[in-house]
Image (cartoon, rainbow, N blue to C red; front, side, top):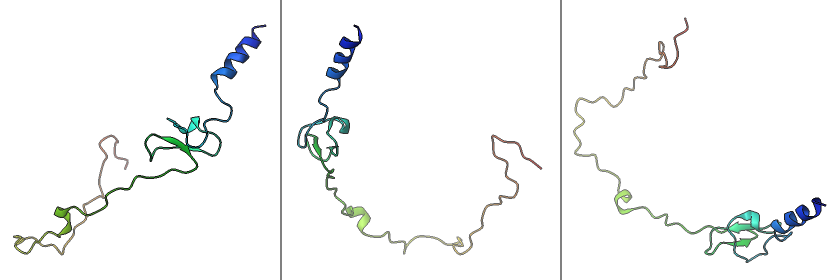
Length: 100
């Protein structure tokens, strides 16, 4: 006898069996029906077959449009042609002991 009220309560708590239809407002995609998702690209969010992405401004900022001029930079005494890799032959990580 307890099974029947529990089953009815469970069915009522689940909501509509098919979920929300296309164009209805949503918070998560789980609310939407089969084959639909919650489109966060529009406001208010609605169930849709595909998501839309808001256009972003991808123009280069003014301060990044012109490369830095290093013509007057003082690089005397700096040899930029030689790159010496660090000595990694005898390195012990701080959390481990060296194994010989």
